[in-house]
Length: 93
Image (tube, rainbow, N blue to C red; front, side, top):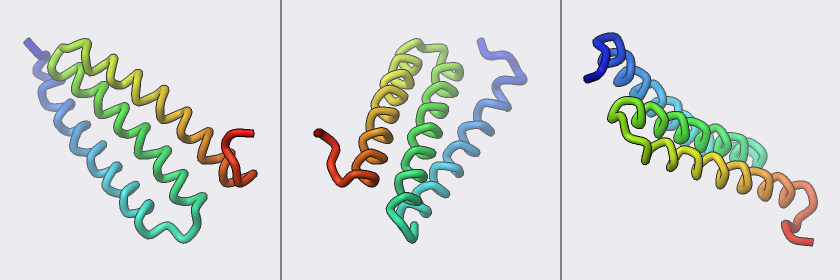
């Protein structure tokens, strides 16, 4: 059973993380430069990872923690690749 404090705090955290991802989506769609879009995408994958961690705590399931780890690894690799592409114009040398 979930602690009574967590039963209130976790849905609030999920709502706020969803709101943050929506704000990142707006920045991705309206960003004036490619760098702004990449930064918003980076922020979005971090918020998605945190959302998965909150879901793992809420449902007491380790599968969500593994999915959050996968999101973190793929998000870091994609952010690095996008930054390299924006700097040099190519990803693989």
